[in-house]
Image 1: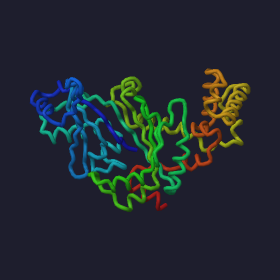
Image 2 (image 1 turned 135 degrees about the horizontal axis):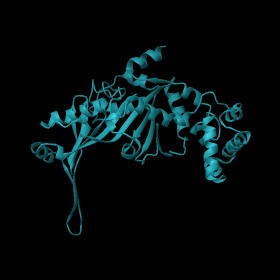
Image 3 (image 1 turned 30 degrees about the vertical axis):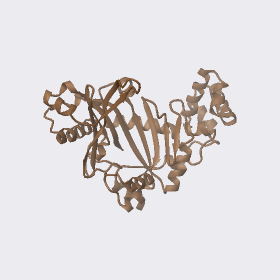
Image 4 (image 1 turned 180 degrees about the horizontal axis):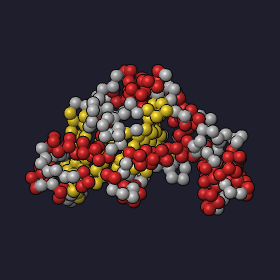
Length: 346
């Protein structure tokens, strides 16, 4: 897994006066005018990029803060944004922010030395890659995920080999896509200035299903429960696992053993019958109609029993135990090019 994106800001009053003047003199300006009066409504600083060979980070001084954002993978090692390196692949948030900030400060000749804890993080993307047997298998998995909706997320957009969940959420949002075609697309872009991927790497990446979890500003304010630099790699992995595993469920569940599995996770026969009846309603009428046919408390109680029995949100959205779910669940997490080549050769 890797930290694939960070957005952070540093209050300008934490910098020395010389650095503030330097920053406020940088960057293009975007202005909005009233066409009738010619009055300036507002002005903001545009994002700018710092590039060095395959490395890149974006920054924007303006208002009362210096903003930085980008993929930490593009800062460390050879700029590999597929698996990352250093703090990015270690899920080390403090190390990522230090590296990103150092790249901006060095490029602009800034003299201040703010501590990492003075930065305010408002977005972190945690990404994992699952290895399937082939690109057709990756696309088959995406076809399952395109219909996967649940209580906390909705499929909001489907574009080619990409699926988005809760795209406008400021708490959590998800994204799934085929990494191989994405790399091929990047290599064809005229303005692409990142690391160049070889044909062998692109072919190998064709077997990767990339799952990205975005923890947004509201999550960091209200859900993290601690300062961002205290959130550990294991906690980030836990957030990612809980978000995506809920879509996939248990590989062992089948239509044949579902009733037995439900009874094993509830206290009474009545609760088991109610949960199984809820499943029958979902199969017959679909998610939305079945929800409307039950009280709110009964709906969520029955859903909990069904999920505890091993059903996933993909199953609940489809109204049946998804056949392709098993190879998707049993796919292997890949964390490096070496792992990818080794597992493909096995």
